[in-house]
Amino acid sequence: MRFSTTKVVIMLVVAAILVTGAVYLYIRSQQSSIVLEQNVDVLEVELNKRTAVLVSVTIRNNGPALILEGASLYKIQSGITLVSSKFSPPIILYTGNITKVPISYQLDKEGADYFLYLFTNKGTAIRCGISYP
Amino acid sequence: MIWTPLTAVMVILGVFGLALMIYTVPKAYNISKKISKASLEERYGLEKEYYLLSTVVWVVLITRIVASMLFWVTNESLIPLIPGAMCQFGVNQAGAPYSWIDNGVKLIVLLVYGIWLSLDFLNRRVKGAPLMQSLSRLFLLLAPLLVLDLALDLGFYFTVSAVTVPCCRVVFTAESPIPCPYCFVFHDAPMFIVVIACYGLAISLVVWSFVIRHFIKRVPEIGGVGMEAIRRLVTLALGFAVMGTVALIPAIMQVLGPAVPVH
Figure 1: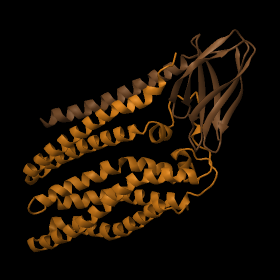
Figure 2: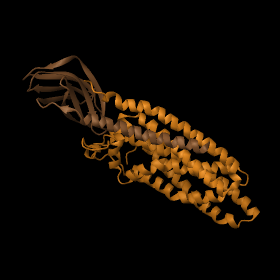
Figure 3: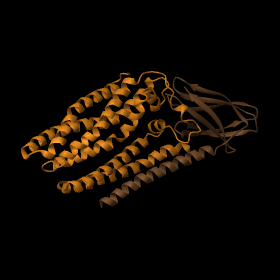
Figure 4: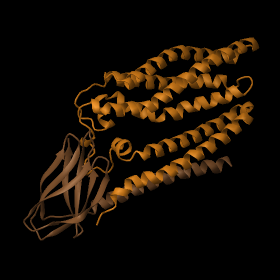
């Protein structure tokens, strides 16, 4: 009885370690599989430093028109996506236009490094590095 | 030194522990040395002395276990007070080198001190205190770890100051294969604290049960009480392991949820 219960405990711990590792690898592989959009320049990132909120990102589309469907905030130090959201309605980036994309994501008050991803209808993403404070 | 209520509590616990250590170590040495050659009357005297020692050691070890949990809370509370610190990594940088070793020590204190506590718990339930000598010796074996634990706490909290430190961003970049454990566990996926605590307790309880089994073979007098204790410990370990597994589901959801691509 004791041996088998001990075995169950050890198996649960090992399984938890394996599952956590697998989930982390899955997240990292998803992250590395994001295809980056080449034709868009990030011009400005607006932060409210008092409240540590990411307010907006200003971008210029140098290529054909794109539709932004959503965004997600990836924290580099913890290696995970903290928040993601869909744009409703989607934001259209016309060729040669400068567009201010409103985002309202809370950042860590103590500071961290992030990647903000803006996902397009082409399946690509515009990546924007944010270091705060 | 940064004086906050929590750092003050940590220092007080450290000084208190050190003072009790000075009291207990010579007594434990005295008992372990005299017990094998003691007459029946002397043994009775040593037994009484041992019960006093055991009570004090319980106080020391329990306060150290409380301090080991408070350690993480205290370090988390120091983050806003240290310029440049974004997580506990920065706090540890400010208190280096004591802080880093202290982190490692704090991870094993419950496991190690629990061995002594569980054996003494058995010893108190068996007539004649058959583990008295073993426990006195074991306490002397634990003493260096206890001194290290106390000294590191005092060294760390007296060293840590509001200096500008480089935090985890200098080590954990976008190319790093592993995340900053402090950012990951304490800030962005806090459900993992529950998971780690539950599994840590489950592993500790299983180890304690193995140690008791080892002592049952050496001291057959504790057999009945020991087997009952093993059964309870292992059942409790299973309970904690199940709790950890249940907590793992929301913990994974916490990490996986926002990671689902929006397109």
